[in-house]
Length: 526
Image 1 (cartoon, rainbow, N blue to C red):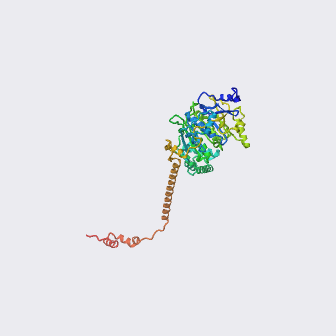
Image 2 (cartoon, rainbow, N blue to C red):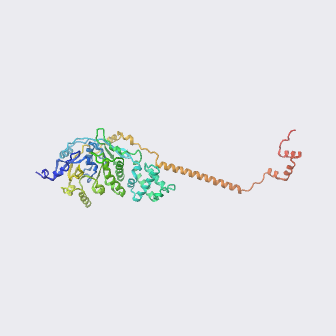
Image 3 (cartoon, one colour):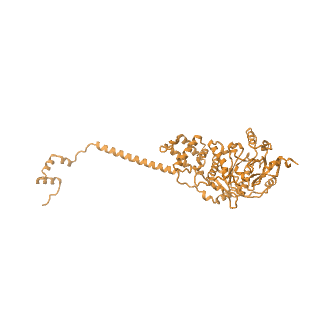
């Protein structure tokens, strides 16, 4: 009898570490001494899914299928799931899988009773770019730390952006879309607004210029579509279907996969928003939601200290909100040590050691596992597709023994659904009418534009009045200095000595007659 069937063998000791009494997800069968042992099942306790996890491995080793396998069982257990679909090949979870010889062989090897099944799914897209219900966020809810990440600002610029957000909030200037943020930045360095921040540090024109240029580049990537209203309610991800199964929310990202910093940061916003909205619940019998963060290395590349602190805090505290987070990436070194330390469940697919850097990464990965009965350096380079090294947290919260595992086959379609089927699923969703059409209400841009227009109109009116007053003064001055005109004939006559002599005689009959003849008045009748 081989070592694998000896009651005292390491294989039995490993398998005993996965003999949980409560509900658990079935991952696959133990691999030991070159054999697959279907009677020794490797599992994850359902209540431990909120202790977070890591799925890692080189490209083509089966990470996506592992996500699909775990997501299916969570949904079947009534737990909602969120999946980021970077390459567009996870949508098949909504449709039953196709039975074939390869699937039947895998099921027989691992002791799986395989049945084709699709799972209730909703499909989303960032801002409506690509297929899916549009997911939008307001600039205010996104916040200065996440915005600094996508704008690639340094620490000083990030602090200045924080002042801008603070000012907008204090003045009731809603930052809904990117033009709102642009308007506030431009206002604060204008003649009218540059004094607004002096008391709390001010905003230099150089920093404002950097932020405005970064916003322009960001908009040119199509980011304007992601910010606006109606803002998506992340509570939609917590729904279950009518039959009690958890809803699988698939965020379709193929249309923006060339903008990794944007979508990875946007995923972080989704997680942070959930954390903000949900109450403390402690440990539950099953999580409220399990969130799979694909291509996690893109989230951490070039991240500021403040951003990393934000992620670390969110991951650490969101567990008590009933949310589990799985990071999916190529090697554990892609994830910062403070975050990695909080990931209690590990599924490590094969690694390659073709270069010195690969060899270094392999050694670093081995060190992140508990002591093992395996030669992990050799094992991790020899695993086949759909095989992984696993350690999880037991029902008591202690790490289980390291177990090489041949994973089960997903029951749903292992590939994307057709474009027509995806579009039909999106359009038939009850959420589509709620979020499909963007809304552009009055916000910071409109308010600042209106104030500036009013200020310009007032300035123009004041300038016109000043000009009118100036012209009036100049006219009066000109009138005072102008030469007196020559007297008219009448004035000459009136002023003459003869006229004065006649006036003295005016009371006499002769004077009256003379005056009448001069002024042409009619002779009075008697």
